[in-house]
Length: 439
Ligand SMILES: Cc1ncc(COP(=O)(O)O)c(C=O)c1O
Image (tube, rainbow, N blue to C red; front, side):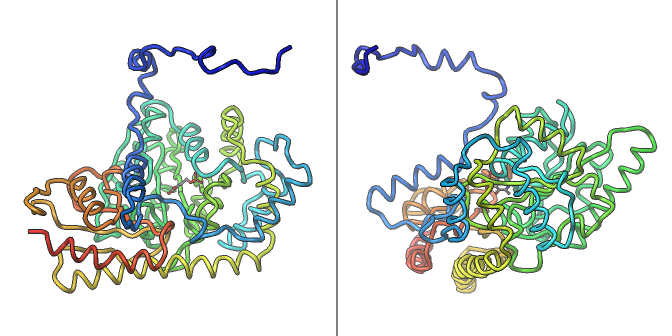
């Protein structure tokens, strides 16, 4: 047997006409739009490569130099790896981790789930997908507000009928019961997210109480008529990053809603560990059992060393508390610097507005520039604003259209995970200079 690799010319494969091949793929993949944020990120990279100063507020991710993962977590994962924890984990997750998650949830949120209610996966995304798959039959109704993160994609993949509620700034871009109520009798799944991506706002507890109370009543009605009950997907992946108020767990706010609650959390955001890929869901055991079976076929398990390491880390309350204090300080300093900077511009009469950040790593910014012009170039869309802000002010932001909110509203998401305080300070003279040139 030869060990010499053939040359590239000898083995060059021909894939033929790619457009033709693409036409043969499924309707579903054709309906999915490519990620808008990734396209924007490519523009930002091109600016940086050209040597231009950029304050990159685009990706919902962390620069590990600005937001490193907890040292204790890194050490524990390394140890697990060196101890040979490298085979398949159980499909529901390592028992030590599921127990550690149940304890962590009890400590952080004052609600105790049994271990059968905890399922581990490779980050939050597989859990969102499994939730939709476990609940939705094609044509079932899923209700969520816009702007929100990726519900539109998951609804598309699962062939759900999406009901998109346009959330208002007055309500902090979180949906209200009045907006949800007309869809209560038809919804199979209601999706809520707090603290929210892209808005950085939190659902007020009284609103959550009202909504969950209505779900419980609706499900009592359905049960009496033999109809399928509805579920609430509560995405609290940013629960460790609640600044304006304590994060309230939905099962604490309305314990009677527990059978219907599918609650997502994980280490991606709270511990700046997006690349480690570890998330969990807590839900009724019957729901978790089905999600486990489904995810087993997807194979979306979190890597075993990460599971063992995370179990050790979450079981060390002092290490978690120390890290959280540091993380809050880093995130809020950046969010406040942006909020104060834009609020000062607003006070000086510039056409900008910013929502007071409450949680997560995001800030909602409005640039009221549609209909104006810069250097003779008309500004007609959010996309025009985005491009011109990047070119002229070196500020990378993401239009709310990327989060399902149609229309040239002037609203954008700013994410602070990849910038330093200096990057933010340096950006404001450029922003002011650009706004001075707008007519
Ligand atoms: C609201 C929300 N939910 C879930 C996720 C998925 O997180 P993960 O990176 O763990 O897949 C994200 C990621 O950005 C998010 O913003």
